[in-house]
Length: 606
Ligand code: F6R
Image (cartoon, rainbow, N blue to C red; front, side):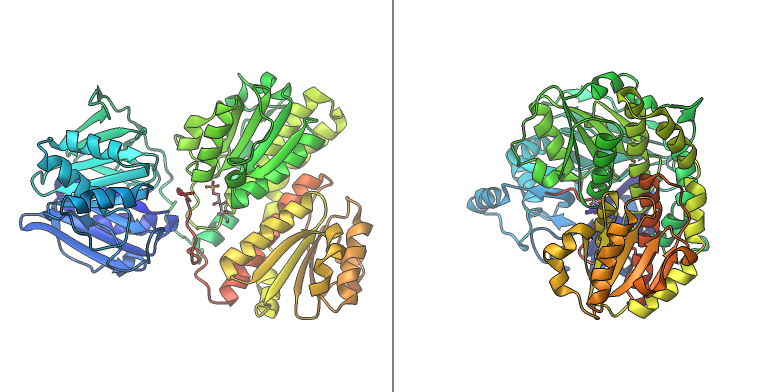
């Protein structure tokens, strides 16, 4: 969602903060702003839209903070963008998250004579700090009292004009990282977006107050107890923000899947054994559980659906699944024999975090399928599998989804071997999963053809994506990608459900993307496709049949891909075709593929 970036040094360039905000734009933005403490006081710049629209200024100071806003409480106007100032103009503050009791706090402050110039929840924060300072608190006490007075989740940094050599930070719920370089300290909403020169970083725990100077970081909890931060090596590949030969990060991340699948498999299959280091202490308890609940949001939830099916069919454990935002408020039967599997790329999704808290209170144990070490979700889980997908910059999740499914398949087959899946199926899986990078590259090699096909269907107003069994979940995932990136209305369905309602909509204007696995009841899907054809529906067929094995009357366009016989791996390969389809449909429609409207990379509010 929002992004925060700040720095303290002998001389902090305004342009460094602007670049930091540009790097964070992938998390979502609709306005942006920067404050710099200079010799002439605090200078503030704001803009609507992308941080690149902030003016280019030759400005420097001792401390500077910046913010990309993703509107929740009020329209994305320049006036509503951060930084916010206190009534006495001394405090300039940026905020990620939500202040849930802001109406009450605002009333409290208005009664004390404070006035407000925006409709946002954030504006109460600088004024509440000013209020506590005016009561005689020192700065840290004012921060502690403010943090206790407000309810919600927040990550805040601010400059106070009376303390021009320090940045002040309050953290409760929204991710914040402090990074150290040789002669500067940085604060950032994620550990990947620090500048190159940052060598070590620390993830800030909840309920902490920090005073950050160029050569020191003082930490305390909300009772004023002093604490120490532990810093670790930053390990981010230098080409994360480099597009190379690609046009967009989404394209780059789709193409990178060969490498990241290789990386996710590295060391995990040895002597016909699946090794998942992060599970060693809990795999026994997991294998004996009464039920497993799979959860996540959006694409991660679609991956969880695949994982759940595999865990039931291969791992032979009772599974169910629900989107995290629903699971949190659903009174399922859960006890200490329940395991929750949470799937999240960012590790910061608020619905998943809420869900973990709720399930843990009921006694469940939690296994995380995570991409971001040290993220909040990573820290809340009992054990986990790191999916090793590297950083995703594009808002639409692609390589992480592939690696999430891969991680859950490894887990399902590992458990399956204990719980009775046939050794032959297990061995077949092991040999086929190692061919996945090859299958992926064979799909990428067809990109020009896929692009051309998309050109013919770019004006479609609606797309149906259909598949059966595991391909139903891939259909949902492809439909999600199509709608979020190209803004074409799309629905993912089970082929078997078509005749129970959706067929009413089929005519020659609707695009149908049909997923057909020749190894899984193909005749059933073919008859679904015939139902579509009989009503004039246009069909793009994604299949592992070759052109010569399938009658051409059932499709308008054919995308034939190479797979083995494992239906889950086939599903992952088809999904990559779907990623390229949605990418090129979006490009043909002139969309901003990496930053689609109304979406954020990391959804840190409910
Ligand atoms: C879709 C997409 C979103 C995310 C969802 C969960 O392409 O990116 O649907 O999958 O917001 O995010 P994480 O995985 O970070 O929890």
